[in-house]
Amino acid sequence: MTRLCTCLLLTCWASVVMAQPFLLVSLPDAEQLAVFEIDSRTGELTHVRDHKTEADPGPMSLSRDGNTLFLSLRNYGGLASYAIDHQTSGLQHLSTIKVDQDPAYHWQDHSGKWLITAYYHTGRVSVHAVDDQGKLDQEASFFGETALNAHGVTATQDNRFVYIPHTGPNLIVAFAFDDQNGELKVLENGAIHSADSTGPRHLATHPTKPWVYGNYEQGNQAVFYKVRSDGLLTRKQVISTVPDDWPTGKGATARMTLSADGRFVYVANRGHNSIASFQINPRTGALSLVGIYPTEPNPRSFVISPCGKWLYAGGQDSGKLAIFRRNKRTGILTRTGTVETGNRPWWLQIIE
Image (cartoon, rainbow, N blue to C red; front, side, top):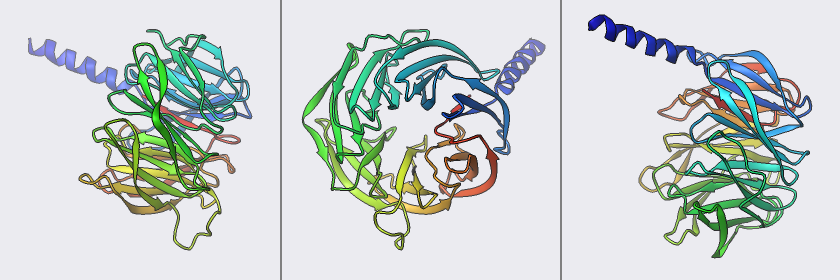
């Protein structure tokens, strides 16, 4: 019996060890995804292959179960889905649907049944069903106008409310979400405005608290909202992502994200070419600056490894990635390396 248990444990251990985490990088000029193997001990990246795409790839996201990759085909105006082989990082094409041009961001809802997408150029939002195999339904359950420069998607943890930020009209639109039918309805007073030249770009919902965090593109700022019982957002704090001596109006933020444990917010600064790290007060939700760390030029996208130990930031103007060791306790970033990716790394996504 002991030998049997030992064999089973070794088999399970071996299967876990075999599955390497991988980093995917969208390279729109080459119409391909660069695939890098991640060394979980050192954070180092090894380029293993390139995956050709149907058109210029942009933003990526993962399904709730982690088995499907969703990909924007920006200028083509398409959304594609791929089955992920976690042992080899292989991608098997499942579906491509035609949508609006420049799907700037997409996100699978908490039920795992719907992909919600924001469209930058047309100022619209769509909801498409995703079947059990990860295929996208061409016919949208919802396709509606919001405002120009729709740029992100997030939802409350109970799946009841969805928020779409817009960089052009300084606007977040709040929706009620019916996850049975995949329908969105703008809330009464659901147009949440910010000051001129702020430009809400991305939003992320705290994993356990009624808090939403975001960034202002033109304002070079991070922002903290509380979610009201009716789904509307109350702005509680705005804090700069660049040093005090940085010229007002110069540069723009890009990607922002929360750490998986909900303790830190990170924001990329284009122009200043840095990543700003903020700690979240666990009692109040307020942000305090941890530090601002230099990256490669024009850091449009970055990603934190699932283990939380590494942060990878793409330099759109240099064709390189900056590798950082991340202190999970303090949120501090330490630059450990650089790797070439190819021209214009647009979006980063880790699979494991």
